Length: 335
Image (cartoon, rainbow, N blue to C red; front, side, top):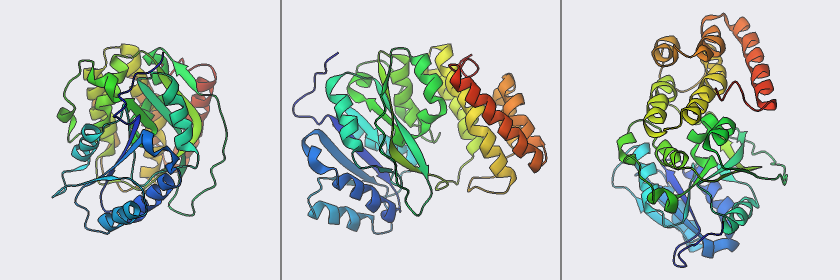
């Protein structure tokens, strides 16, 4: 399908919600400035949640050097969800890519994305990522891998599952989402998963989506916290997907991805005393939500209750099972 874009609107908005991370924002804007040959097709927004650091000075410096940025600064900190929503609502592009201020796009990444968006109509575009630590920045190998097109939301959800929650990896067709019925996104403020509002709307009215398997995005790990992770990726995730996705297979793939792939390594890390999240009893948080799902009892409960050494061994078993499941088309994840 060819696309019909308003010539007055950019093809893609890259919207960056930020708070008090000027050094990371500078790195991201540098990666964008180095790919500035697509100015007519791209809109860049920085939505500053009243940062007390040098964020405004960083933005001003890039603007003075020729990078076109629409800078929105809140008078007070409205919280992450409301800031994400502000980014989405302010975007003028046909496609919206809300991008974490502590992540960055590798050289040539924007060209790759635009080459796909120019020629076809997609509801969702998911971009493969590579995890990084704060420093040193890694060399990201430039592989040109074929992208994969999906005409079924449940098959896409089997591949992406929990990674739909990672904002920097997902590009949504705002024009399409605006044309279909969906519950208000503002109702998800406070869930820490407001991005699932537009993701679920796209999945619920799905026609065609794309998975770009080239690792264009580098995502910083272990740079967030201060919230109840089990509650957010347990009860909040399940409630949102149950309420906003009618396809049982699609929403189960997302929930099962949390149980099979997301929680096991997190539970082991928590056992080791790592992480910046609010302390929870994982069993008390997860069993009321997923107690009727055998995946919780097989993939997560043993890691939570075993001694650390045994839990490490069990995580290896979990990873082998997940690898086999992936190789044979995700039959375990998808049912």
